[in-house]
Image (cartoon, rainbow, N blue to C red; front, side):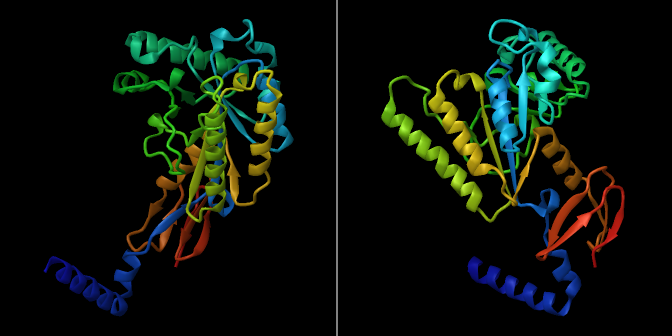
Length: 307
């Protein structure tokens, strides 16, 4: 009986909508597209700031890819870590982000120590890079409500965990940012497991293939550490292989993590009239939207008629 009633209600709504275009208009969905009307976004996110970043950045630049690098400022200049003097040139065109000053497990320390770990790291990275640093990756990927509450007011606008989702959804909570997957999935996590490594690598490339083929709006966020490749040329070859697969794709928006956050916030803050015929973009970012398969570019700081 409930199914019959629901069917009758849908039929009635459809009939009224055909005679009343304003009702049909109210059911119209406004969809976000990425810059230039693209339907996919790629984030490459690497932690710690080890010397292997030199080779990783060189490889990214070769394929015109953009990286986000989460760094521990108190480790810079120590054994196996980058030197402060090379930071600005090395990461030019990429994003540098907070990873705390000393890489502690944040849920295990006091509130004041959480604050100092983040603020001191942010302060030093801003001094080195010359721009506001607004993002973060949690050490070991660990966080909780206590940590997030302590972060309030510290200027951190997103924070990445290491909880792989293997999907392409846009994060609902930027301070609990779950990436798509680790580089190479979970291959090489255990020594001397060649069969498991092969299965994980196959899974890794299947996820990339699904991303490239999906028709839905999709974000692929791959994270890892350059030191995981170390001196293993096979792993560097594998890194170059998947970089090459993802590079030079007209459907992909190659993004710093903070730029994607800014863009999504700009879309979410668009101001629409009740009839959805007028939109105001109060941000400094051009935003692309799709309505009934028509793409609109809503220029920064303008009001636009969509009818």
